[in-house]
Amino acid sequence: MQLSRGEFIQYLDADDLLATGKIALQVQILSQHPPLTLAMGMWGRFIEHPEQTTWAENEAVYHAQTGIEFLQLKLETHSMIQPGAWLTPRILCERAGPWDERLSLNDDGEYFTRVALCAQRLIGTPDARAHYRSDITTSLSRRRTARALRSLYSSEKLTISHLLAADASPRSRSAAILGWRRLACELYPEEPKLALAAQQAARALGAEDDTPIGAPNWVGQVARLIGWRNARRLQFLRNRFG
Image (cartoon, rainbow, N blue to C red):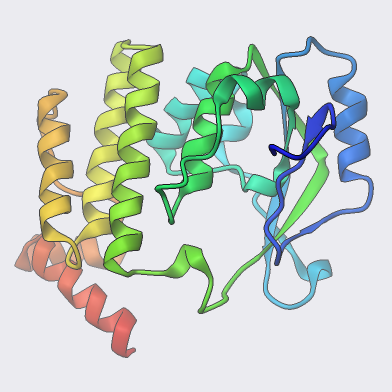
């Protein structure tokens, strides 16, 4: 970013791909809108062959028209825009500031939180497509090290604080509570102290129920019998040992 000179910035992980014409299409659309418009394209996952990409057509965040609405939907539904799907005017990158290099996991999620909040409008460009290479055991996004999970906690804490600083409405507070509850589930059992901190943050926002959410359905069913902590331990062992 510091070395670039272009009017638009395209971020792309080394192992992902852009569909032919993706950038050109988004540049054309953005040129018809005010400078602080952010373009979000369609993204999908593939394992080996990009022509077999499964498109994430039902992500709730596609319906967002503002940064605040984007973050509300992101936290409410745990949906996302993959980094390669965005095309960002340079002016938004400059206003959002640099990537937070303290983060190792979900640094892109925290960064585009700030970019989206700096935009006056988000516009969907579903024909501009990005292919997200998935199911790579060595990928950064699949790491469960202590450092990675601390980064996940920090990035979500920053994301929630960015939203509440921009909008303290009941909907944003409710979305933040859901974000904290989901994060507690994600962090347990590897990082129980951080999971507890996430629950406490949900309570501080007025959560009447801070039980973690977001685990697979079978975990929720088992949790009703043996408690959510034991259910998450079972899920952890199942993921690690099959």
